[in-house]
Length: 158
Image 1: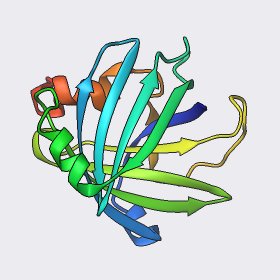
Image 2: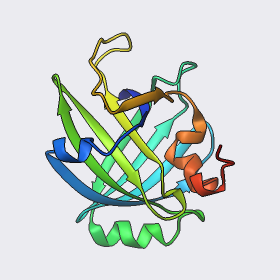
Image 3: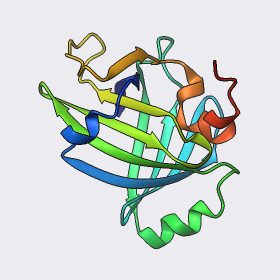
Image 4: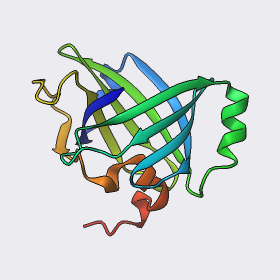
C-alpha cells in the first residue's frame, strides 16, 4: 500500500480542544536504513509492526505495510530495537473532511509538535487549521526514525 501524507509543524496548543481522540504511543525501530524502516509501536493497548519503504523524491508518498501484533509481542520487540525510543501523545483532529494526527513528543523530543494529514492522492486539496505552521514534508530530520537517532533536544535551536 502507498501512503500519501504531508507533515507540518504546529504553532499553538489549540488543537487539543478540537481533538476527538487522544492516545499515548511508544515506538522503536528494528531498522532505520534510509531505503526501509521497520517500526514497532505500542499504541495504547495495541501493538503494531510496520515496514516503510523509501520516500518519493518530494517526500509525499512511500510504501507502507502494517500488521497488528499483541501488546506483549510489541513490548518484547521494543527491547530489541535500536537505541532511541520515540514517546508521544497523538491527538486526532477532524478538520474539513480530513483527520490531522498531531503528535506531541516527549522525552528527548520534548518541545516538538508535528501534524500529519493522509491524502488519497498526491495533489489532493485540503484546508489547514489555523494552528498549522511550516510544512516539513520530505524533510527527513522530522521522520520518527531520524528523531530516534538524532532527537529534537540535540538540534541547535535559534
